[in-house]
Image (cartoon, rainbow, N blue to C red; front, side, top):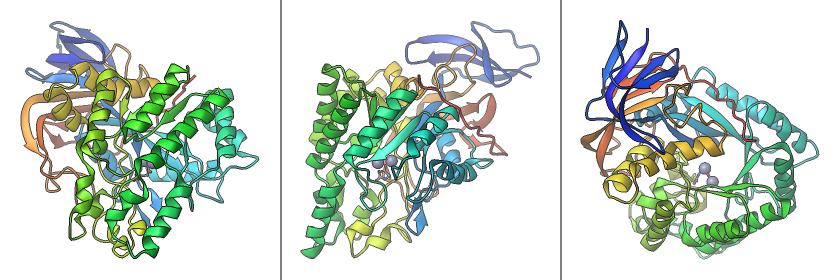
Length: 457
Ligand code: URP
Ligand code: ZN
Ligand code: ZN
């Protein structure tokens, strides 16, 4: 049986029009006015926006972090994603030191297979560089994992040196891959943390002081220069400040292919939270840290003029009780990260579209289409077109509600967006034609999420 979504206003990254959509066997098969419904299921989308299922290319589900794991695994994280209109995520499958890339991938396959409700891809995070890494990178590309993540921070676990980064970038150029970078200078951070702790400055208000803007800007500039030298494209994740964005702009003027991502936390939250008492500020211990309102404004300008192309969540939640509190007496032991996969899409609608800062088309481009293109999934994902996967969200722009830990679906004991008023709400979600959310209620019985094989070049 086919499904017809009727009377909706279809919004893609480029279009805005009224039409019906026919879905069959997981694909969009027809788009037009007054589609005939002979025995098909009808979904009336009158008064609603009908948009492509959103794509979040930056999640850390079930991330091993010392002796704990991020609080959402693939089951709970993917449910929360779908409830918030995100039908595809790209998670960071991670090679830990001592492992091969294949071992890291196998570990992540076990976490995701038959557990994910939404579709998913992987970036492969490389923690160790040796003689076999280049060959393994090529094999990853052949397996449909054409993007990698490298860190210039987290010295003890993930950080690579400049020579290794340069080699990896040169390899990515040759094999048609893209490397994404967490840009902060890990060596400098180590020194600054040590200095604070030695001075008895152990509270979380020293977390942003250990990781100031210059630490991010320096690493961003350096990584881009290394990519320029290696003649490779490069993707900068979670940009939090104007100076890092400026490095992107300057590089683009020189002809470097740089992709730039930011996250809702850097657009909607600011550093004043680190002054909160009673361990409340630990909720916002993320890296890079939150900046001031002037930096937020620079990021918004970047979104408006297209310099920032993608808004991802960097979903990496840890419970305040039982996880973040490991760092009660030492801020450097607070696991870094916060939740966002469920709310990213709605937050951008409320404070972007409704607030008049971005258009409906920009909203879809920033949260879906651009990511599908950059990450090698377009037009299978990221748009509504004949032949595309029927990943479709019916979004009611007239609804209003408030984000709260009491109504979210993320498996964590707080949300950084508690009390944020929202305009518009995800009403129905289709994943490859399967009705997974209907009238805001969870409907899906089985974790039918599929691995998305991607190809970038
Ligand atoms: O604080 C953060 N962002 N944690 C998640 C891991 C990362 O650095 O992206
Ligand atoms: Zn990061
Ligand atoms: Zn991350």
